[in-house]
Length: 131
Image 1 (cartoon, rainbow, N blue to C red):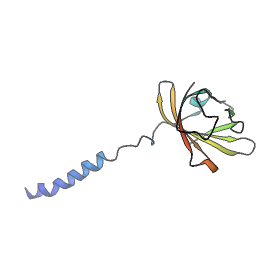
Image 2 (cartoon, rainbow, N blue to C red; image 1 turned 60 degrees about the vertical axis):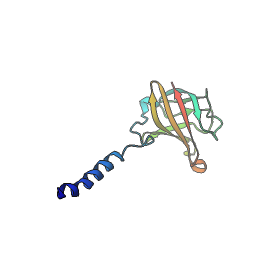
Image 3 (spheres, helix red, strand yellow; image 1 turned 90 degrees about the vertical axis):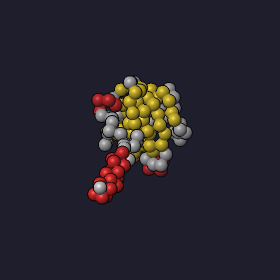
Image 4 (tube, helix red, strand yellow; image 1 turned 180 degrees about the vertical axis):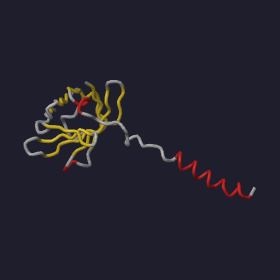
């Protein structure tokens, strides 16, 4: 009986540790790939206050297979995939623009976190977009 009472706290700790290690929503296994990204996307909603005026409902984002992109911001004209994220940049100087991280997919609508780079690295907004 004493052995059982000594083992019981260990068992309780193991069970607690296993249930408390669930995955966070932001730590997703889903990511962008070239085949998914290429095409024209329409922003269907914006959650948060965007410091980037061109990120608003109804705006279009076009990602071409040759690495060019077109948004409502003229300096955001090239893209690549790094670590499953879309990294946009100004092609002429290689200056980074924005980072698009895939959060979830609901049918043909993608929920994406958009982060700034350089001076706006602490800024972000959540958008939904679909082809």
